[in-house]
Length: 222
Ligand SMILES: N[C@@H](CCC(=O)N[C@@H](CS)C(=O)NCC(=O)O)C(=O)O
Image (cartoon, rainbow, N blue to C red; front, side, top):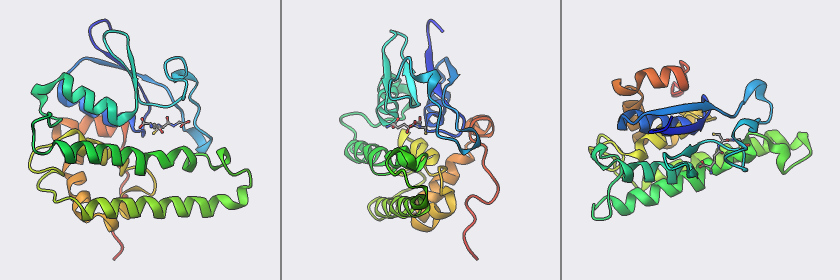
C-alpha cells in the first residue's frame, strides 16, 4: 500500500490496539497476519521476522518504508502523526505526563510478561514449574493493574473525558490472559473504561473480527 501503513499484526494480539488506532484515525492500512498462536504452541513469528528480528507484532511499516516496533511507541507516534484524531495529548497538554507514564507502564510492567507467559520454556526447561510461573505472572499482572487503578482517576476514559491511545491500549492488553475477570477485580474503574471502548460503535466490527469478546471474560464472581 504505497500511501498507507503496512501493519504486521495477529488476531488476539497487541497489534489489534494499533488496528483500532488506525481505524479511528481513518488512515489506510493493510494488515499482514504475522504471528500464529495456534494450538497453544509457542508463537510462530516467521512472517514478521523479515521486518522485526524480535519476531513480534505489532510492527508498523510507515509510508517512508521505515519500520517501527513497540506497541506503545507506535501508538504514541501515530497520535503525533495524526493530531486531528485527538488520540495523543501533545507536549503542552496537561495530560501529557500521565499519558506517557501509563503508556510506558502498560508496555513494560504488563505486556512484557507475555514473552515468558506465552512460552515458559524460554526461561524454564522444567515443565513441572510452568503452572506456578503462570500463576505468579498472572498475580503480578493483577498487582500492576491494581497499582494503576489506585493512581488514576478516570472519567469516561482513563485520562478524562476524551478517548486516547491509552484507552485503546488498556482495552486490548486487558483482554490477554487472565482476561477481563481478574482485571475487573483488580481495577474496576479501568474495567469500566475498557467496556466503554469495547462498545464503541466505530470499533465494533474490528473487535468482532480481530479480538472477539468471549462471553464471560468479564464476569465477576457472584
Ligand atoms: N514489546 C513489544 C511486545 C510485543 C509482543 O510481545 N507481541 C506478541 C503478540 S501480543 C508477540 O508477537 N509474541 C510472539 C513472541 O514474543 O515470540 C511491544 O510492546 O510491541
